[in-house]
Length: 470
Ligand SMILES: Cc1ncc(COP(=O)(O)O)c(C=O)c1O
Image (cartoon, rainbow, N blue to C red; front, side, top):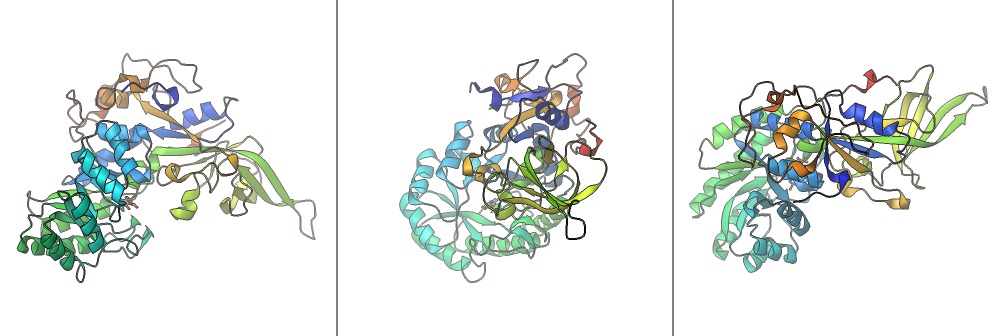
């Protein structure tokens, strides 16, 4: 595929640059007024490496709904990952980059008829269902579908619960669905669940995998040959978080209940892959200093900062995804700190990003950075009140470029190397580059020129903004 729009290409950074210096360059260029994202491809590759190390048996199928940025999809496709799609248009997006339909699961248990017809037409066969009506619909519209019965097993604590909407009861409903599927002549290939997004109850995976095993046995008794266990999403993805505990529980449960290669284990991680890869830079366009109380009418008691992205844009995640965000001023503050609040740009009083925080005094044009903004932000954002959804500047270091430049669907054309008029820090000194740094046999690329051997696993993907002196 020929990439023509400069903004959509991956800018290869020289060794002196990183996400933070790019943000600084763009923000302080004097040319940038709008909020913008920097997407670090290395962060996504690093996450994949972690996934493969921690859960080698589990094949990830990225949940496109979490962030459908085309380069994200292309990078994940290049890494050999599968995809969880919720709709016809997500399926089309994934197919458009050349992913084979067999690498897609249509993991929406309540699908519009036309979307099922479309899945059948393009060869997406694996799909979930959690009710009788859906089974009848699938029988009518895609009779050769590979049906996965989604059960309910909720985490006791999760950022977003899903069980109230999806997943049949594993004891009272799932057996009847299996029997109905048998009567209808459908092909049930396995069981899926989603414990809730942003799961904070690792043992729930044990319970869900145990329930799945019981249903695998029943399905086998009924004459099916189940071979797919889909353990859904729920894995944290912010900087500083870890999937270790969840991975341990999953690995142990798989050993106990599915200790066979005959069962293929997949998962549908969303936020794990993208949350920390996206950093948002916003600027202050207006400020209101609330002054005084009765005793000192002239002193500032609270600063209200109005920035160029809000809850109708990227920060919709505060409302829909129950996220908490941490503002990081780009410029090191000094002097007194004030009780402050941060507001989005629209005329709605609901459009508040941070309610109450102590901050140094900032001025119009100052920038505020928000990390971990990759999950459930951009796909939901709207230009309400006429404020544009922030653009994404995509960067990768030289090692990532070496790793991915020939990994289909990525090609050389996806990368920008050397000096360009773009207001990004570029200029690549290729000589002396250590291309070993990203060589990892755990990562299977779709290209034949796969780099091999782990030498130095990447460590540096946590950025410390406080170190940046302006
Ligand atoms: C069916 C399904 N799979 C996967 C995901 C991704 O979940 P997470 O981002 O928590 O990994 C979701 C999120 O809503 C989902 O609905």
